[in-house]
Amino acid sequence: MIESEVLKDIVPIAVEAGERIMQIYDTDFEVDYKADQSPLTEADKASHEHIVARLEALFPDTPVLSEESTDIPWSTRKEWTEYWLIDPLDGTKEFVNRNGEFTVNIALIREGVSVMGIVYAPVLDICWFAAEGNGALCQKGDGAPERIHASQPMDYAGLKIVGSRSHQSDAIKQFMSHLSDPELVPMGSSLKLCAVADGTADIYPRLGLTSEWDTAAAHCVVTEAGGVIVEGSGVALGYNGKESILNPFFLVLGGADDQWRSDVTQWFGDAAAQ
Image 1: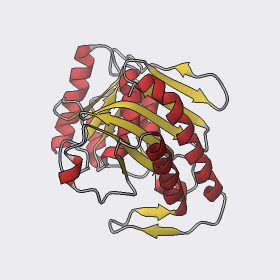
Image 2: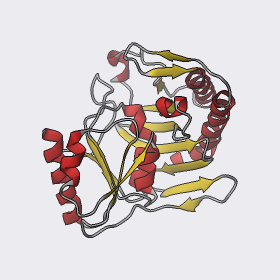
Image 3: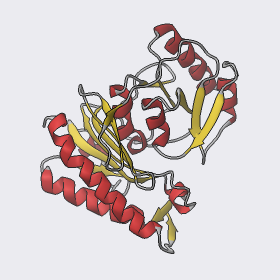
Image 4: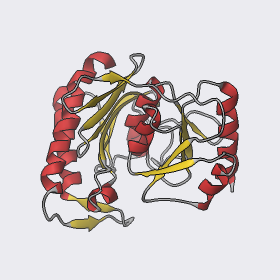
C-alpha cells in the first residue's frame, strides 16, 4: 500500500475511536485491572473494537496487533512483513485520572519500521500524523493540517525535557544533570513524543518500561518531523524483531547537529546503564 494515499482513510478512524472514548469519558465508568495491574476500561475496549473492525474491512490481508489483542503468538508474528500496530487508548491511567492526556495510536509497521502513524488526542482534539517520505503534520480541530518540525537546539542550556506524569525514575535526574537549567515538562501518553515532533519539547528520555504499541504511531511522526528515536546504544528503535513486545529504554530528540545528538545519546546511555 502507498502510505500517503492510505493516510486519509486512517486519520478518520482514529478520530472516530476518540469520539467513542469521549462518550465513555463523560460517564461514571468502571475500571478493571489486567494481570499486570494496568487499568482497563470500557473505553479501551470500544476504541479497540472500532479500529480493528475498520482496518480489517479496509485491509483484510494486513494483520492487526493491538494492546487489547496480545494473544497472537511470536511464531505467527515473526512471519509478518507488514502489519497494523495500535494502542486504542494510550494513557489509560490519564483517562482514569481525567486529565485529558491520553491518545489513540495507529501505526503501520513494515519490516520493523514505522512507515505511517496517527496519534489523536480526543480531549485536545489534535491529531498528529505522518507517512514515510511525506513529512509530519498536525491538525487542530477543524483547522487545516500544518507541517511540523522537531526543534534543532545547538547547545545544552534551557532545554525542555518532556517526561511521564505517571512514571519517573532517579535515572532521569542523572541524565538531566548534564544539562544547564533544563525544564521538565510532565505529560502523559504519546503526547510526549508528539511534543518533540512539533518542537514543543526538545528531548524525551524514557528510562522505564513501555510496549511497542506505545511508541509506534508517534515514531513515524517524530522521524518525519526530523527527529529520531534511539536506544541507549544509539541504534534506532525497531519493531517486531523479538518475541517480547516490550521496548528497551529509548530517547526521543530533535537536533540537527550530529555532535549534539551524540552527546545527548551518550548521557542517556550512561543513565540507562545504571
